[in-house]
Image (cartoon, rainbow, N blue to C red; front, side):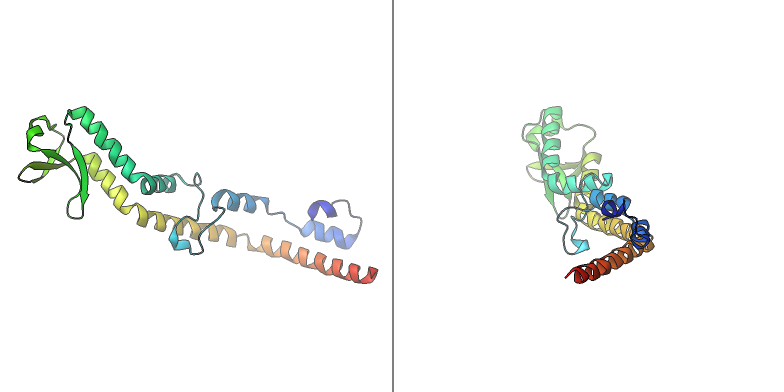
Length: 187
């Protein structure tokens, strides 16, 4: 619309041209932030594009790939310790833990902290596993909270630009009315 009006000589159309704000910065912000197919409810998550916020990207990665991250740690620990039957498991009481059968107890490294002793095995934790557990367990809730905070911040940013939206909307409304009158006059 702005390009079409650029060469106009009409004072009325020139005024509309001057009042039209293309809002390119706002468009760029929304395009870079909001996913192409956002959910209908903000609290569901999935509102923002990957790459817009590093913390959100990490949370999404953990949510989508938590099992792979745990499997990578398990494989790395098997290699590091030489314990072939080492397993990382999860339960609601202990969270994530490393399970080692009694036949391999002598290979357990010093950085493993004993969590539980069973008849045929020992369960251990590590600082890395505790940190990962807190990330995985809290990732979904933190994602929802972070996305809601980001959405609220975006609303504040857009609300601060309300006068720009209104000015452009008014200019388009006047132009629409003039176009309707002109079309009627031609008929």
